[in-house]
Image (tube, rainbow, N blue to C red; front, side, top):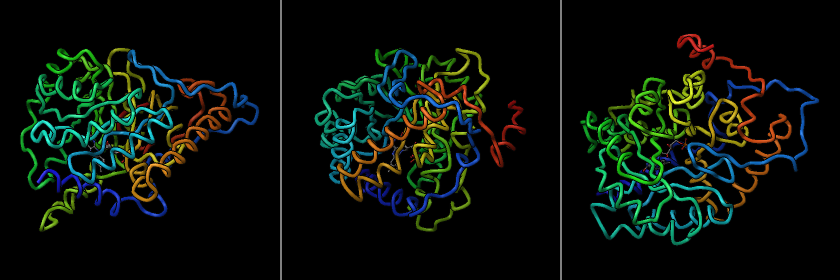
Length: 346
Ligand code: FNR
């Protein structure tokens, strides 16, 4: 059952949501003011980023997706090779299935075997115990743990969980137990300012706002229901852009260090998220599409192109590091501007 679900998620995420020309989303409402004399030399630009004690050579990562079936194990192998060849951090999909079905451990372990020196995050649900968390970190010799919050997905999922109240205590216990960083993430519905403040109170050092506008698990799970009777949930949540703006004036320590994902379609979207305060940017759907259509070679070429284009955009915008992008002039329009007005963001 779990294996079948993992395969369905991959198929539905790709066939239903990766369209030939990417759909409009909130990243389009973020525009840079062009300053024609602001540019730097490309060679003076660094892509390195650091946050909460984590140091990455690039501000881009392959976000958590899959594993738990023979087919998704092969996808993980290809993702891991691409991460190794390009030096970018990567995360597994949820390893809950590997805790229940030890035969499936190999479909995740391949991500470490193919990428022995890379930065690898393992992924679990917030239902996990501290023992579960320690076990999956050990299984992959992982550098960090991602804990996903997916109440919207569970609600629409036919066989989904209906209880979420234990999550805050579970997260605090996991943070307490592990020696590696814990990154709490959404799965495409966004983390609000109050949620981020709560996570900081629970001791979480890093949060991935993973917002709406890209892969939509409400649509994916609705498509898995015989009656398709949760179609009204499509589009739930806030975009990464809105989540970053919601937290933009938070004092240090009030919210975790932020990384962002959800709806990232191009290198320009990466740079937009960095300019709004993300320390790194994750991509799932678009990179999955590259692997499904051209294998690891296609993904390697895509990531290399994106890294060069991100560096070129930094040079154009006068930002010698990803963090320096926060000093660029950004204009907010449309729905994003309306969100800021309604939430009282200056
Ligand atoms: C995901 N995502 C995800 N997230 C997570 O924390 N654990 C998981 O097991 C999965 N599984 C999964 C499968 C597939 C096929 C996709 C495409 C995505 C969610 C992912 O990490 C990310 O938060 C969202 O997909 C939004 O990013 P994109 O796809 O819009 O770039």
